[in-house]
Amino acid sequence: MRHVLVIGIGMGEAEGLTGHALSALGRADVFFLLDKSEGAGELVRAREELIARFGKPGHRVVRAPSPKRAPASLDSARNTYEGAVADWHGARAALLAGLIAGELGEDQTGAMLVWGDPMLYDSTLRVLAKARAQADFAVEVFPGITALQALCAAHALPLNAIGEEVLLTTGRHVAAATPDAPAFAVLLDDGTGLAALAARGFQGQIWWGANLGTAGQVLHAGTFSEVAGAILETRAQVKAARGWVMDVWLARRDG
Ligand SMILES: C[S@@+](CC[C@H](N)C(=O)[O-])C[C@H]1O[C@@H](n2cnc3c(N)ncnc32)[C@H](O)[C@@H]1O
Image 1: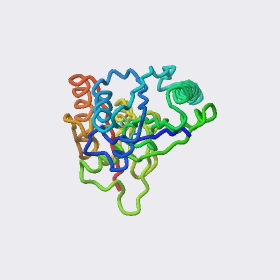
Image 2 (image 1 turned 120 degrees about the horizontal axis):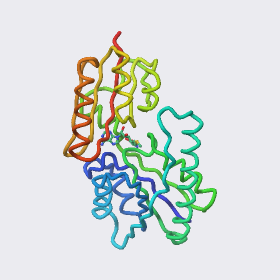
Image 3 (image 1 turned 30 degrees about the vertical axis):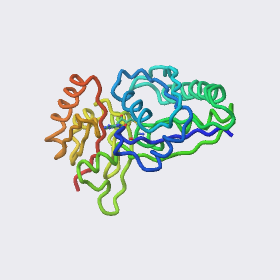
Image 4 (image 1 turned 45 degrees about the vertical axis):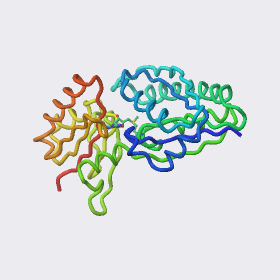
């Protein structure tokens, strides 16, 4: 039977891979790279370097342009956004089903490298579940260090206060409304979530990190009202200088 390994690669550094992820990289006959054309050439290169370094001799790399997602603006109705994502996943599933059936021999193993961990704000597993309706293959998952773990480690910070609930959310949700949770961790923010929270006068603490695990990692922490402006400035500077920025942050309410 065909196998597809979904390998969490953490922040893309060889040192951050688990032993299981390393062995999985050495098992694959074919690596599938779906180019999202994010313009983040560095991130694509990080994946290629891991494959070149840890892939077994004779492995192949199959590239395909990822189907494009229809744009959905921040204020678009929830069903428009979810509909656009569902269509996009359907197109990716059809593409992957075709690649797996066409590029893998009956008993061969393919692999997909996922930034961070496949369970956190990543749709590879959902898309593969859809693809399995169209092609016969088994899936094995190898966890990776998430951006959230990298953030907490960089700040030497426990994610939760004692017995505290922590909400995981996105910049899109925070831009729409401040979460009720005592603490919330925010991924996929283009800066609008942070800016909206600042505009609403959020009272609490923030721990922020951008481009974690790369040479240009940047950190900020402190009282939200005192550091939010500097974080937004740093974010813009990193993006201008490097061409891309990915950030994650944890906020905790006062009291
Ligand atoms: C599509 S999600 C993928 C999350 C990933 N699966 C994980 O486990 O970390 C992308 C978001 O993860 C966060 N992220 C990923 N890599 C990061 C990095 N190197 N530094 C800071 N945040 C990062 C950012 O919030 C980014 O918008």
